[in-house]
Image (cartoon, rainbow, N blue to C red; front, side, top):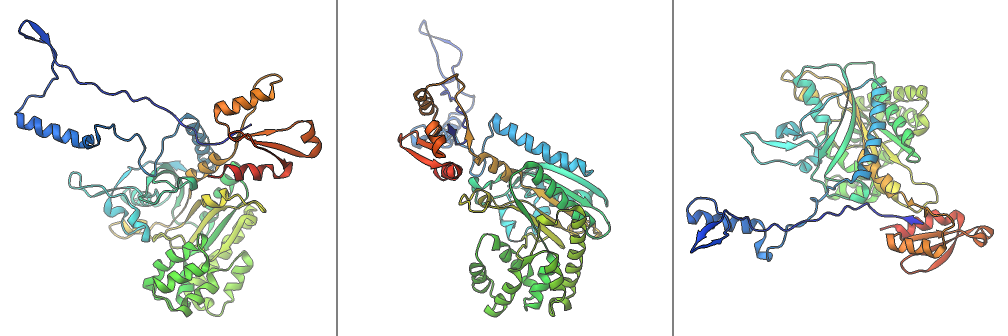
Length: 475
């Protein structure tokens, strides 16, 4: 018998009665009156009107809606236990690689955050002026870390940080996208030999996703310098590089034709320039593609692209030593639209199983991402001193959503239970589907699948059972 659906918690709201004041004599009788605050009658009338307006008195005195704000949710004990296990696995990996934990305020000065996230700056939660400071809720953990390094004059650090961040995004809860969510970040700050810290970050992603056993995955890698070199050889002015990155970054969600249309229609590129970009950004491969692009007659003449390709070749050599190149794809469509990236960028995505029409792994999107940001700390340092940094963020909420969507199954804990009692249990507890296997089903190699609500039954070949259950349980 199969149970599917979110856990729910119910609560009881008791109506509040009038507050009663002390008894007072009145013609030999004792009466009770509602207590009133001292003050002029006019003040009491104004206060009463304000209270009624706030409580929605126009709607007949209805209680306020019992719901969480859009893009947020409560977590019952079972969810918290699962999330804690996930966080523990991630933190264990971070510590294994020598990182120490820090914490920063959930509030930052607005000027600290603005201008760091490209087109996503509009998603920052800005707060009203409080005590003369313009504040905002943190959008990620990377910019606060850079501010922390600059403020404390730290030039070498390996840290991790697990905390909530906030984005005024259009939420899609079934895809693990919320307005309030946890991020788990690992970063290496300091001057080291090229590509060694970057390779370690990719090794960490590989370790965590392998340990969690979420299914097959791929880690896409690219380099902002390579991408900027592509834009340059395609005739794009440098002032449009960042906005082009934001557009190219949509290739994981939109076909090239739609991305090209945006480049031409909204970003003002010529069709020829857009087509030229398309010849590059649709390429993906491994070290062989790096070697191919190093021989490209145009890219090889661009300083930025040549530097990026040289470092990408070195990165693949380290990843070969780590034994993880089988999960790495050099993908020129990867852009990551944040302004602060300066070098290698990467993103891990789950792969949809072959011949599986279920969209759960794909719909959840990327489950980790990061890159190199060598100039961010210098933006906060009074003297502009730079501290090279590279880091990765694990999308714990999206991973949690994947685990939530997996089918839950149970059996009835009774010795020799009668079939009718089992089916009645399904109806009583809201289990939508029952899988029945008897002697005839074993002989025929099928499973009888019963829709508990309609009581319809159908024989499903055993190898197709999982697909059929998932299809029926899709929202």
